[in-house]
Length: 361
Image (cartoon, rainbow, N blue to C red; front, side, top):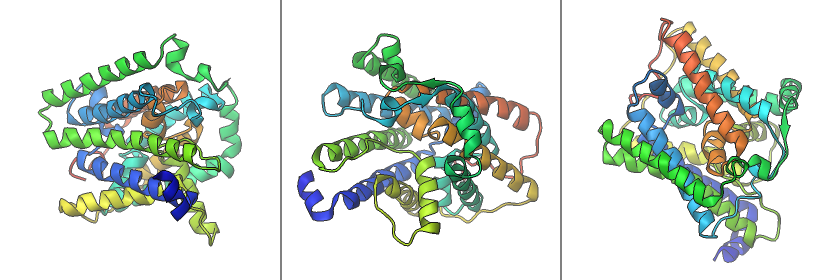
């Protein structure tokens, strides 16, 4: 079946359509569930443990359990994924994760949440997302790349077993499945305690399974294709920067999985908001709010390129294959978010806008 589609559409076009589909699924269910790491981190840091934390835990657990279940069944091999096979940076993961966590509090949403809200008419999120993409590109190949490379090279780790956090502790796929199950139980416990509606529970789980779908799709393409296909799943920092530069500098776009993610998430979120009558234009109310959002977007853009991914790319996709650096990034994000919320928001800074991660936006 897949070989027939490759012959009919070509590898690049089929990969792009796959990215569009996976991105669309994530965008739809992320919008319906209000998935947002920033909102979850705020609840956690304030000791509330409410519905937003439950949604994040369910999405995260679904990605972990789903990915490792297919690995256990022999239907997926993630050993060649970039997060495991290539050299990584411990220093980049730690510094980048904290920077990203600080930035998402200031911008009131992580990269994926900004994209989801942009499709709903939130102009604050749209501008912040564009600044995020520009900063990510500048950090990858532009003016900020020397600083990124310096921090990255402070502490490197070789690819292979040393990048698999469970292998470091002597565990394998059964332990990964069991560990993922604990996260799922925690998510369900918080969901029931918060009286989370069943539709939100299902939407959160479906958003996590979109990550699994990305792994499966690219893996199957790599097995059926004659040309090399990179094993990957959802991420937003690299694809955002790539799409921006292709639009600005190239009259011909080379299709691929990454290039389908961003428009897919946008369309999926738009459809979800339109069917729920939640499309609404929103903008900045004052200069203070705008400065805060833009500073947060810059911190997220640089932090994501240091960390090797955003809140989804590293924090969910990378964590689902138990990449050591991804778990360090995730810890840094929660730490940076909690400290920034404590120092900035709970210290009495004016709130010019409603929180991006809240259900009402």
